[in-house]
Each structure stands twice: as C-alpha cells, then as structure tokens.
Image (cartoon, rainbow, N blue to C red):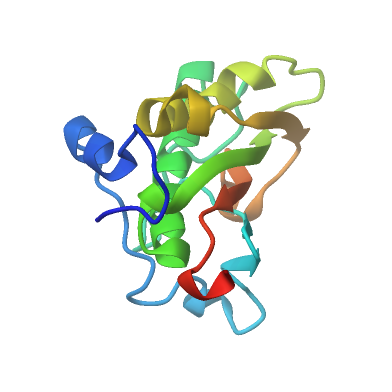
Length: 174
C-alpha cells in the first residue's frame, strides 16, 4: 500500500521483511467482546490516540500473563511488550488503512505489572519501542515513552500500552 506522504521508509514492506504476523482488528471489530463502551481509537485531525493494548491474541490467548519480577523474567516482560506493539500495528492499520500513513509516533505510555520497588520498567517497555524502531526506522519510530509500574492489569496482563501518533492528513482534510 502506498502512502499519502513522502517517506524514504516503507513500514509495510519492513513488516513483511521482518515476517511479522499483524492481527486484523476489523474482523471482528476491536473491542466488540468488551461491550459498546470501548472505543478502539480517537482521531482528531492528524493526531490518533489508541485504546489500551495488551499482549493478547484476537482469540483471547495471552502472552506471558503475570507479574514481572515475580512470575516473569524481564525477558518475558520484554517479549510481552513486543507482542503488544505488534498488536498495535494491527490497530494502526485498522485506524489508518496502512502503516505507511504514520508520520511520527509521539507517545507510548507503558504499564507493567510488577511488585513494589521494581525499577527496571524501562527494560520491559523497550520490547515495544524497539519494535517500533525496527518497523518505522528512527525518524518515525522514535517515541516519547513513560513506564509505570502497576500492581494489576486486566486479565492478569503483564503489559499494557497506550499509543499516540501523528498521521498523514486525510485526502479530504486539506
């Protein structure tokens, strides 16, 4: 799929090169099993904010549920964060039609289930942000990131991600 904006980096081609399996959030629509109150994303002009994503497949299978630093190693938390970022690529496609419509990632707010005092949150969150660099390259894929420790997340998820990005204007936007 071609992009509406010029870029030397083709994220869709890069996904294929990496062999990533990106989920389709259009069928069934994301959030449907959680009720009508869940909105998958919100777009205002060229800003898109996504609902929380976790390391869970479309069928509900979870990757590395539990608590990083107790049940899970940092490497397992990193893997859960990476899988969550792969899921977010599917959500970006759902919202924009193509990964090539991304102009810049702006914010990754990362939640890690961990015990009090666990201070290696950044090492877990890097699983998500490293993937973005692999897919989008440093100009588009470098993102502001905050990592927050949580005592629990929904369905015992070890990681949750809130992502915001800048996208190309819609053809009707101007």
